[in-house]
Amino acid sequence: MSEVNASTVKLLPSGRSFSVNAHETILEAALRQNIGLPYGCRNGACGACKGRVVEGQVKHRQYQEKALPAAESAAGQALLCCAEASSSELVIEARESSAGEIPVKTLPCRVESIEKIHDVAVLKLKIPASERLQFMAGQYIDILMRDGKARSFSLANAPHDDAFLELHIRHMAGGTFSEYVFKTMKEREILRFKGPLGTFCLNESSDKPIVFLASGTGFAPIKGIIEHMIHQNIQRPMTLYWGGRRPADLYFHHMAESWAQQLPHFRYVPVVSDATEEDQWTGRTGFVHQAVLDDFADLSGHEVYACGAPVVVEAAHQSFIQERQLPADSFFSDAFFLSKDLTPKA
Image 1: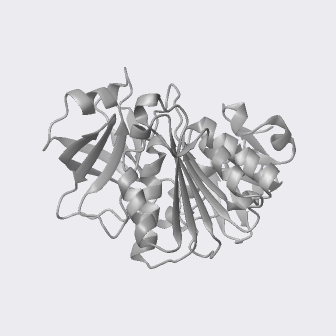
Image 2: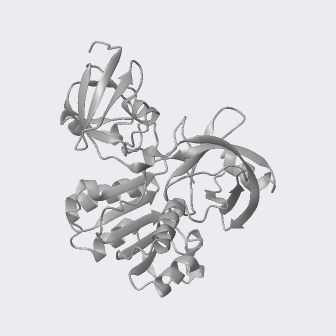
């Protein structure tokens, strides 16, 4: 495929157009021009940025094959975070998000508090009084490290509750940043971050019932979305399935229980996969996505928001669409990937 200096991309179904420079990915160009294409990892790992090339040609940078299997590539699908234009004009079918219209800022912040619950640190950050971070529930920020690398973490608070930015950080043995948070970080330290990022946000144009699926700290952005819905008095039926290996992994279990008690349209299903006798667990067991399969024979009229470990998100995506008739465009996800360039969001 020949190299082109600049290309024009037309999006379907919206009809919006934008330009793409040589050696620039389609996602990079869209974000530069405040066009809200879906994305998650920005590293060719999660598949959230997938779109269909209707006309024209693209070439891909390196990506993980599971994010774009060969059959999908042959059918015209492309990973927009890795795809560069190879023709002067492109027509791409892709879902758009208003999250892309929010300006991305780089700001300092102060560590206001560090609360450790089991192996999760609930970090609250304060930005300068002269600044305000506009964001949508479910988005994430990049903590900028002194070595030039970034660590991505989902925002666990809703936009209306923005006195502090709340992050849920799981302690990972040997993890540079999580070890720092758990062993060294002090209150009032100054950090820098970039955000908001990502498009894992509520589809507010829909009134479909929602299934939330969280594993571990995948609860963080879902917490933000649920609190946003409560604040906005959005009364769509909601069921939250939250999975962990042990009961202690459901570190805000009582918060989820309180939602179920207070909201008639909300149901909470905790699921534990590896409970021991000492846990005295009497609730649901097994894999959290299997609990959804056991409870729903048909998801064709629902939306699913899944967040957490890639193996959980991928299993849910495949089984819900293939076995429970969930429309592909009704599955919203944010998987916490780990690679040489990317750390989990929590």
